[in-house]
Image 1: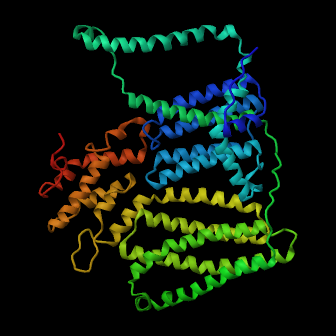
Image 2: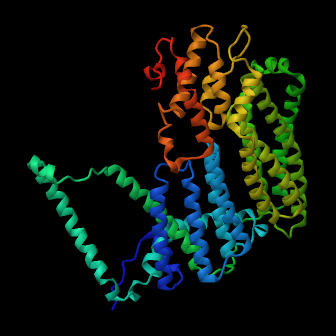
Image 3: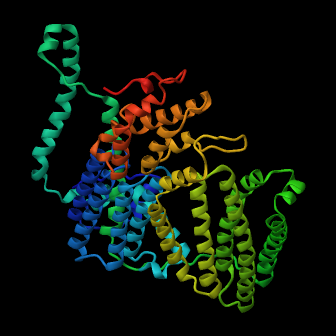
Length: 541
């Protein structure tokens, strides 16, 4: 009789109780695949996600899922396969040209596409994105995270069914493992003591140096990716695809009076704000200064992000009212549509005010990555609001989630196409002098440009080298920019670390070549600057 396994506690116990009974060989093969994915992650992703190692690992994951699905179900439907290819595509885009926030967004897009692949593959809670509500995406995402977090527990303790493994088949392996686990610590401990006791013995028995911290980091990375891979693969492969009707939620309903009160009050508040905005949009800086005492630039800076939050929070407000307004209450639905359209019309002026403030701020202080990303996010919110008016306010709720998902991924691709770092550098250099020649001029911030991603290197390096050293301040700024370039992309800093093939991408490689080709000239920018770092003034040998 097989010895019963101990029951896990809390969330893992609940997952074990509801886990469907699956065949042991499939579960054990899935565990093997997850361990291989963990080993691959430890080898490929130990130094980070910023190179070609990330898409290689994602391709490995996709290949494992496709192979298991074909073996168990005969293949994968078209839509989940497209989402898997989209995940691999965003991982490749991440490896080709990614830096800063754009890199993080690529990783999130890859994870999002994998989650959508899981939703459409298992048809839980919907079979296709075209039929999904926003709540379906939230439910599917939460389910994917939960399966990845605890799915390995029922996979190991329940699905694998170790009692069916023939005792004789694993007896030799188990004996060898026990012998190794017993012998190896004894040799390491006594060997270390004897080497310390006798130098001649130490010279005879040379033990390889072991970096315990590095070994532990490899184990943690490999274990983490094996754990989540096992849970995620189990939810997609071991569960027979079937539509599970969601439990009806007992939500409170809103009538026409509640909807009119809530949306009407917010619309009145927006109308009052719009009236104020029209004054400064048409009255100019004189009205702003007379009313608030602030200059144009400071007024613009203080208002943009608050208005972004107003636009963002309007979306869940309308989605929540749509969810709580009964479909059979004609009066409540009509009031929701009318007030929703009014609210969006007023919000359009609010959004126009936010974009005008950002344009003013960029005109005064130049363009930065934060300002570019904030503007792109605001434009995406505009597209989401327009799509909300076309779908939710016309009783087409199932189209909304698909449009938001596709528009988010499309916005990310557009950001890659415009190459944000390069755009910021060229915009600032075209509109601002490198060194101010008059009292009112604002020179370009060379230090900021030198901190941009590798795609801007071909523009920034020539600008730093041609910057004149008119006085000590301009010479110091030029030296700071040159030092930053050398520290980030040259052999003085991260350049050697980025030579690891796992972190390679073409944009970074091109930036490294440019900085190394001009390394001596960049070091020369600090030759006569007092207090310059010693490494920045020494020519490369």
